[in-house]
Length: 102
Image 1 (cartoon, helix red, strand yellow):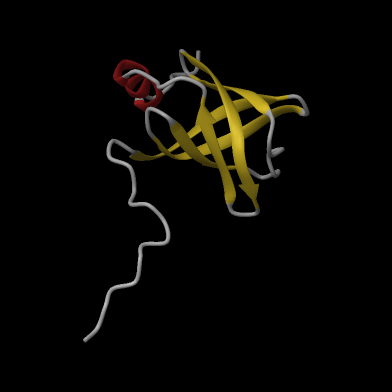
Image 2: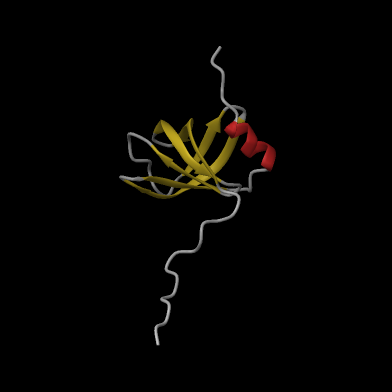
């Protein structure tokens, strides 16, 4: 009789939106341009040319959104950013709205 292996990683959280939008992350080491790959109320997965400093507080800016966050993981494939507070659905929508340069 076969048995299923335990799930090693939790299932993808509901409400996560897959996007590809540019943002700025302000860290103690300076400002980083990142690409948001997916975002939810509590976290975002991003990539950038430079590796983000893991374990530090940052500010994420995208359009009208400024959110305090923490770099939970960073490697050659990207970084996981955890927000200190859950973003509202309106804030998530503001991230998804294209920013028009003036």
